Image (cartoon, rainbow, N blue to C red; front, side, top):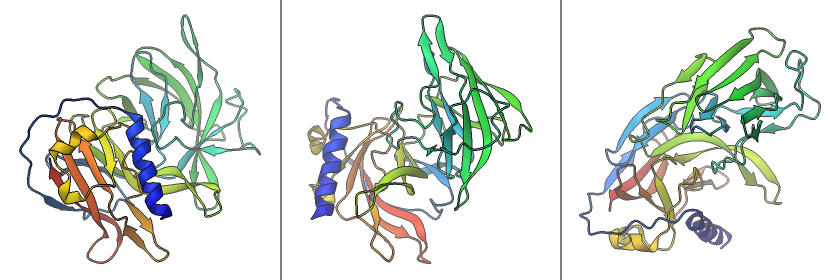
Length: 326
């Protein structure tokens, strides 16, 4: 009963996030397809396009570290937590003088909703009449090794304007200090930066994908109600072009185009999320009666539901789902 109530509550939350009022017109539905992944979502980032039923791009979870907002007035910086990276705010502006992890270190991750007011880096600038002014705080980018965090880079964001960001980074001991300029490319809402590549990395065109299968950090709750950071495997949507909602009330077979006018859609990043499967004490199983409806980048509507999470060798992390264009 608790799980059913939780699912109904999640439906209400999703529907409250974003109202889609596009007129519903008659439409010829497509054939139902079974999509089976032979690539693990534990070890890869997988961009998927619903209309072509195809994988658009595959990368390792740590192929980028930071995402920079590209709107002319944008200044938000996101963290890629897929590879267990987190951010620590030091409270210090002394770049050279920051040589250790503060005793009070709090390792943070972005809210999985995509809320720009809830990023790990936070508001690193003050907005003034003549533009954004950096507070010059030093941040630590840490990688969790299973026991503790090892500092991968210390970072100081220096400036942002309508065209670019500048920041510097180094190892914690000061070695390999570099200053980077990241140019805003407004094709994407965020451009992706990799310290390994020492610059921006390619990402799919925002018109070419709908779903990203990926590890990401979110907050789960223990049986005692204690909030706990956890690296889950799930789906983030293309928040620039894609809308989604959850239907736990109707049977999958009965969801059709005429029902669309009853839905409210959201572009919340984790609108699909990870709760379409759960751990039953022995293994992960698919949560029953979770039907997702998505408006894709081309304006088509699709319904899909997960039917499996294992491959033929019974290895977890290989989702399969039924998909149909409405």
